Image 1 (spheres, rainbow, N blue to C red):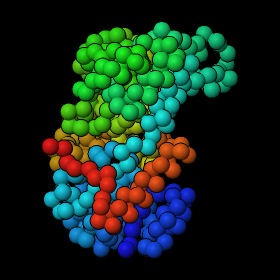
Image 2 (tube, rainbow, N blue to C red):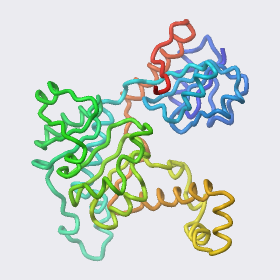
Image 3 (cartoon, helix red, strand yellow):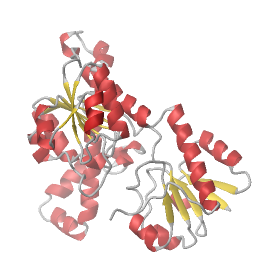
Length: 351
């Protein structure tokens, strides 16, 4: 059996080649290098599986993603074609929770400004003064495995914690020491907001102009879940107005800026010219509105991560030795169990 691994690191390649020695393991930088007769592929979050890819690979039997989220895979199209999809249900509960607090602390103690303080003409403690977490209110949107670990850490800092979730766990809340409240109440009282929910049609842009307007003034926003949970343009506006005073982001709406300099894709001046040119801009937008929206998205995400009030990490909240080992082991299990005819960790389209 030929098994393709897309976007894998050298250490992962060595692991899978050794563990699956009875098969032919092939390693590809991107989906374009996957042969048309591929039967099994293992992908990461930046590889997007759509109907066109599935049509071009009619022999495909299994897609196993080395992630918990599956929003980069068209599950309905896979189901139509009888292609099984497996994920890694849990691997980074502690890792992502710890990274969440790394972002919180980086903002609360103004580490980005502190790193650059010695480059200023005059050093000032006031310019890099942070604040204590003790007594502050942390609002958790999504109290699943990761969110609950974030809550436990927050209680260790003696923070007050509010949580919003469609599936409440009152006994757990009583034991750990937090309170479930409606979303609007959480927004109004939280000093720090942290997102820990999956990307679904109903959660896309859960933080937008309307919800930012309901937030406590001076809130800090943390996102280690999915970039599309936040409306990027609305977040930039909230940062510029001072309604949001800082953002700790491990994910973006458009993560191509992680892999290539944005100026190599399109310059801000060109986008502005296209937007503002009375005739040419209108014609181009009418001819290809999706492309214009795509270019605008690239520029907004690039603009966001260069702001001094934003601490950004390149989708690396999962990236600990322990979590990557768990991902690899579970992916290996997904492949072996599928080949044995008893698949595990299957993902179905939402009802």
